[in-house]
Image 1 (cartoon, one colour):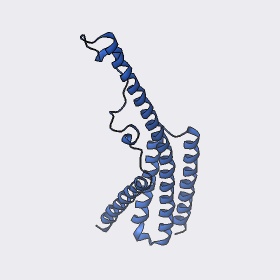
Image 2 (cartoon, helix red, strand yellow; image 1 turned 180 degrees about the vertical axis):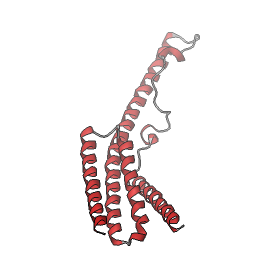
Image 3 (cartoon, one colour; image 1 turned 90 degrees about the vertical axis):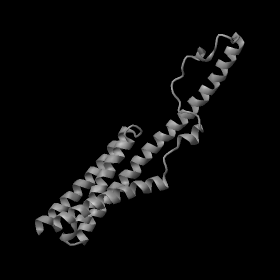
Image 4 (cartoon, one colour; image 1 turned 45 degrees about the vertical axis):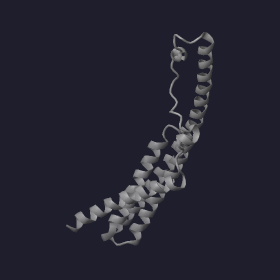
Length: 177
């Protein structure tokens, strides 16, 4: 029964640490809000036919005036949407970097906790390690589109080296016992 309870606590630690890391990122580095860029305008979509809003009882001048007004508004919407999209890309890239660092820190901390605590308390270390792995995975998912391929490769390589090194150290430690 104690092994089941230990597994449950390990899973609980993983979930709580992961959610706490996500909340920390959101608290100190919030995602861009569409309303900050475009106000309460509806989200930009492809423009519809320009003459669609003109009615049969309008004069040609009124119709052209209405189309001109709409084109100006559409241009404004395109600009605010482009600014928002650019901010989203920057956020995605920065989130990738921040979340990768936090996940890697969690992995390193879990390794050192395993060295400090007794073998009966491995659920703490395992829970923190799981949260770090999930955070790294989420960093890649969230930042995939907006992060440069070379940066993803370099960060992935560094994380892989750290994980492999920690695993080798852990295996050596368990072989001695």
